Amino acid sequence: MAKIEIYTTPLCGYCSRAKSLLERKGAAYEETDLTVTPGARDIMIKRAGGLRTVPQIFIDGKHIGGSDDLQLLERNGQLDPLLA
Image (cartoon, rainbow, N blue to C red; front, side, top):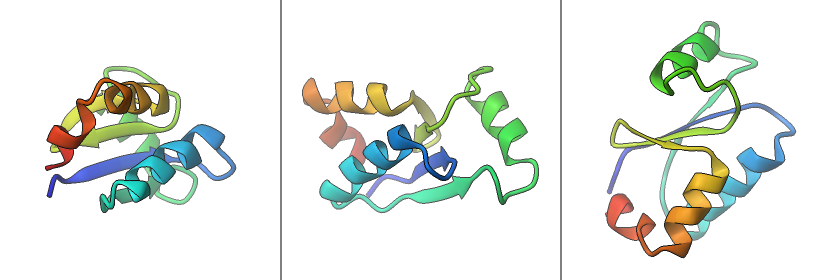
């Protein structure tokens, strides 16, 4: 299974939506809460090419984007191959 990393903050509806989709797929993910992990926001911004919004999602080290990008991959049938 793919290594999935997701940067989040509490009370973020988009974060919950992305995590929910991954959970429905049975995909385990590593979550980094930006409010409790020192320096994580700077790391996320650098990895995401300057993007500052959450969630930011990475699959096998590749930047996927945010919740809407994850949903689009699912609708286009491209998410399952990435998770395999």
